[in-house]
Length: 478
Image (tube, rainbow, N blue to C red; front, side):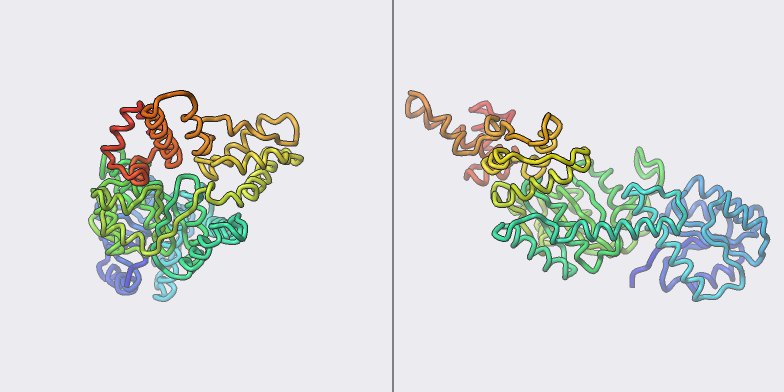
């Protein structure tokens, strides 16, 4: 049975420590200290969710100790437990040390367990609100209300039915797969080009699952070096590495009971892949610099724009990790593969832009929608969103005219780009080379410079492709 959190009991009486340990150990990992100095040593080496501290101890009061804890280790939820009901102590505890609960002796075991469970839940809610940009200085009740409201809004916003597509779209099958995945607690790997909406599908899977009332957290694995990525995902103790200025709870722990979305998983190093594999196998994490592991219950949805099977064959991605992540693979089609959806998505984007830009009269001219349908969108939905925003900013009238998309080099469909290279009176050898160069350029654009995927589609090795890039002076395109 996994524990709900780590509790630090600070009490100078050994019998009181043992009584609290017996009551709490079924649900929590319980650490005990007989004085403030020993408690601080434990806080330096462990990530603690809540502190139960006796008020009257030799040399220092509980309020005085917790006031210092608030400055040095602000994350643990702080509680006083005392046989004295001095009103001045209570007021000082609430105001100076940020005490969550003042528990009087004799305490009832069932009630004490409930209070500590609420404290650990508050700890996790505070961390979730930090990732969501909510003011964590609010009262516990306000934090719970804010998180509850945000989750309710997210359930409506990221419902499968809100993913824009027409009945004949390939997205129809994707959504059906997503619905099936949501019903089962299984790891999902979403593949597809950048900008196709992989995170949108991941959120729909989470909010359509039994984990919807728990946290959904996101990490871009390609954006950080290994040490910082480990800190973000698994947590760290203050001083664990250069730049670790405070204790940090990892996103796996924030997502306990919920879902973590690991974007760009194909960009991770082999060394990090080993550590992630262990977390997935054992369902436990060890924060950097911490002495103990802690159990977590997290569903993983990963995403990549790489061909991970090819990466496995090339030895750049661990095979065992791939099969852990790809228990249920789903591929997101590129926007050019779903032309029947382009106008629907464009209208949805414009509806949002009209509100945010305060221009309610905006509408597309027929020529604009026709141009959208002709363009092959190498940047997918994200590029479409950016193009519409640009059109709105530049428009002097409410009717948005066709943008000059087809005149851009990157905007040419592959066939048009290739045909343009074959004009003229060059020799057959020159024409063949021009054709080869055009095909490479077109494929590079389609896969946004991803060498592995380009080489795989063209039937070349990575070395062979790089030689051709050098020969045709295309290295800047890769």
